[in-house]
Length: 131
Length: 113
Image 1 (tube, rainbow over the protein chains, first blue to last red):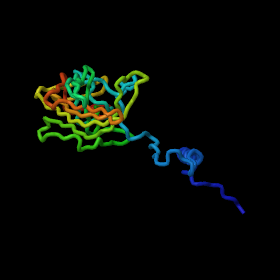
Image 2 (cartoon, rainbow over the protein chains, first blue to last red):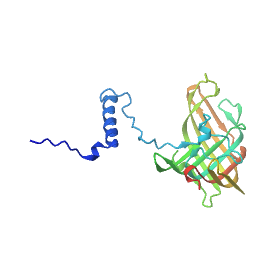
Image 3 (spheres, helix red, strand yellow):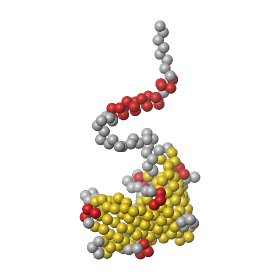
Image 4 (spheres, helix red, strand yellow):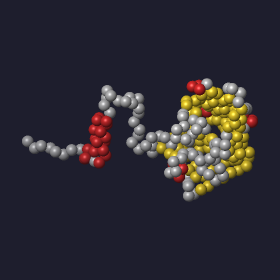
């Protein structure tokens, strides 16, 4: 009897090997009865749906900068939509003991962004604020 | 944030951002490394109003374009830090001010053309 060794060509592809490898890895990495984070969902393989930071701010360890003339208003990269920003905020308030306490400083800034952004290789919709 | 937190007037000249009891962290000594962080809640209303003065930024190097208006921005807020029995409430919205504010439309990154 002749033994047939031909397999489906698709099963020999690199993608198939990666899929097989990932399956094998996860079967060891997540013990079914001893998972410390049972409700945690796995991130997509090509990145989460969280927005990208502004690259040159992220490079310096920051995700925002005070609003100002000719400065990038958004905190999100790969974004199109509405933006509102403000900085140099000042105001006053009162605490529960009657003390008058000011708020705001030259770097006190706020912002809101609403629209489309690109993440996880797809267009996403969202509204984000920085307070 | 929930989409309903931001309302925009029909003519687009006023943005109102309003949220209640947002979980935040009270960290008075930030950014000191030993700064103690205490859970707190914040309720606020922030209003941007266009002044009508047009603003346009376009930076091909950094790949962003903003078109919109200069604006006024005012805020009223209330903060509670229950664990230390502290609360604070701002004066009414009209009593605050920001020296710089803008509002409009932006495209950056892959949306910049």
